[in-house]
Each structure stands twice: as structure tokens, then as C-alpha cells.
Amino acid sequence: YGRFGVLGDLTYFSIKADKDLTIGRLPAISGKVETAGTKALLVAYYRAYETEKSSIDVMAGVHYLGADLDVDVVGANHEISRSVDEALWDPVIGVRAKTRLTEHIGLMGLATYGGFGVSSDSLYELHGYVTYSFTPKITAELGYRYYSADWSGDRISYDAALGGPVLGVTFGF
Image 1 (cartoon, rainbow, N blue to C red):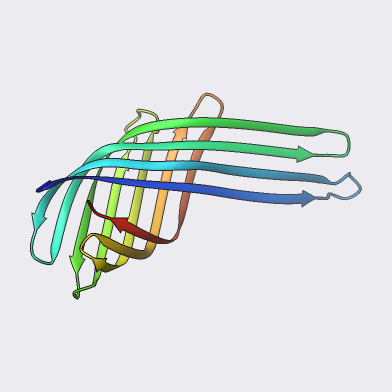
Image 2 (tube, helix red, strand yellow; image 1 turned 30 degrees about the horizontal axis):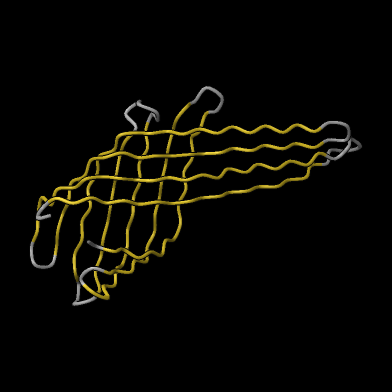
């Protein structure tokens, strides 16, 4: 719609860790920690700068993080299991930049910052991609994403960062 648009991003994550511990003659202890969840970003953007090959968008919207933390510890005579679920909604602001290097290949970067004490103390996300445009409306992306969040709930404090390679497809409307 001219210089205005909407951007949505949905991510599922799951991280597990298992550890067995033996200390001297004491009975063995085993433990498992698992965190899983969904994060979503929905922002409106305004195209602040545009040329034939490049554009810069400023964004504002909402970030959602639904996190589930499960902890299990098993000893000789005891077993402890705890589970905590949190759902956080935070305002975010950001910027996205794109440039086309050839007819089909380009670069894209995105940065958001949010939280502002609403649900999270702070959160930020950085994306960097090499893009390949199949058509003007369908683009594949290969890159790296880094996400960091810091918040404290009633039953859990969360200060974590996730990062890694990303492969995706964008559909424009």
C-alpha cells in the first residue's frame, strides 16, 4: 500500500539439555532442562527511503514470546519436576534495510528493540540475510538471526539469547 506495509514473523524453538552427575560414593543424580516456545513479531512499517535498488523501512508493533520451561531432577530416592509457562507481549520499534546487488540477489538486514518494561525489561533481535528473488513477490533468504530477551515473571527469570542460521521464504502481497 504505497509506502506502508505489515510484516509478520513466526518462530518455534526447542532447546534440551540432559546431564548425569556422580560425586564420589553418592548416588547418581540425573537432570533434564527443556525450554520451548513460540515467538512472533507483527509490525507496521513506513518506507522512509527508496531507490530503484534499495529501501529502508522504520517499524513499530508488537512482539510475543510464549515460553515453557521444564526441569526434571532424579536422585536415588527423590524426583523433582517443575514446569513454568509464560506469555509476554511487548511493544517494539525497528528498522529494516534491503538492497539489490543483481537482478535476483540482494542483502537484507533487520533490527528491532523492545520491551521497555511492559512485559520484558528489554529484548532485541538482529537479522542479516542474502536474498534470492524468484519473482517480485517470492524471495528466499539465507542468513543469521540473533535474539536476546531479559524479563522476570512471577515464577521465573529469563535472560537468554538465541542465535543461528536461518533459511526462509518471504511472500509479498
